[in-house]
Amino acid sequence: MTRFAKRRDKLRSQLRKTKLESLLITNATNVGYLTGFTGDDSYLILSADRCVMLSDQRFTTQLEEECPDLDVEIRGPGKKMLDSIAAVLKKLKLTTVGFEASSMTVALHSALKAALAKCELVETTGWVEQLRMVKDRDEIDRTRRACQLARRAFEVVRATLTPEMTELQVAADLEYQARRFGGKCMSFPSIVAVGPRSALPHANPTAQRLGADDFVLIDWGVNEALYMSDLTRILVTGKILPKLRKVYGVVLKAQLAGIKAIRPGVTAEAVDQAARSVIAKAGYGKQFGHSLGHGVGLEIHEAPRLGAGRDLVLKPGMIVTVEPGIYLPGWGGVRIEDDVLVTRDGHEVLSSVPKDLDQCVVG
Ligand code: ZN
Ligand code: ZN
Image 1 (cartoon, helix red, strand yellow):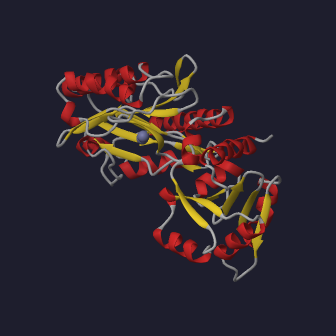
Image 2 (tube, rainbow, N blue to C red):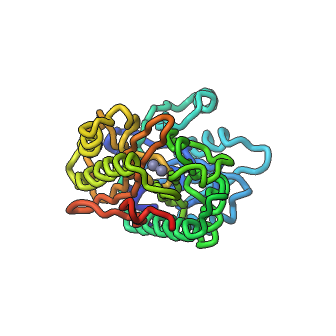
Image 3 (tube, rainbow, N blue to C red):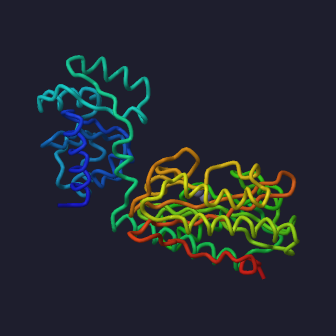
């Protein structure tokens, strides 16, 4: 059985549990997760014994290559996806169908309701996303490679930094190197923020030059074979002033406390708290205004979230970021981020870029 068939089987047991006949999967990431298909504009209908991919003629060959074990319903030019859905449900004699409420537009839902007048549409939320939280060996390997590519690109760019370079140039170079090393693309547009600009947790790169301040925050990641990495480092391009040493020390201590707390059986909230309490104790609680981390995989932000009020319990195979930060408007921000796998007996940090402050000095 392929790993995709295994995933579909897990979804079938969810169907049985909720006594639902079938599920219509419209979220492209979820369709890919369940089938291995890397195209888009294609939906999947899954029932107890059938699985049909609904697509169009642009993808006929790609579907044969990527998902040879699937039944495929290809519609011709001018034919509508909605008609395909209705035809397949009728052919399979399915009268109740679950839909993915959290990724469907109101417009599509209304159109489905009209087109499937004889079917009962049942709202489901996060079924596939729940499965995606726990990664299999192949997904872990891909994420590991995504972390290695991020490191290689970072090391090359780091060795070429000059005071004249702008934030935009650093972001462009990171992407160029990541792709030269074989990455598909960046996981997201890189954040490169010099000095005070790093106080914006999601700063867009500008024409600001590295030489304008003593440090730069870089938040980047590489998409390797669809799986993503997500890292943040501070690089010291000038002097280590006492304030940077102090703030950096607190953030690093918090990050290591968060990582140390990761193991099967603990809640996402407890991990957040382990890191947050270090920052609060140092007097910077109000300056850490986001949650500690997030799941990373086919999407850059996915379940589980590590934050207050998250009672989700960590399981082996989950991959989360741990990224505490302290942001001081006018001065700057420090965030340190790594990708961490929950293992059977604890955790493994998948990303490996040095992070002791003295190792972050560009020389
Ligand atoms: Zn990040
Ligand atoms: Zn992140």
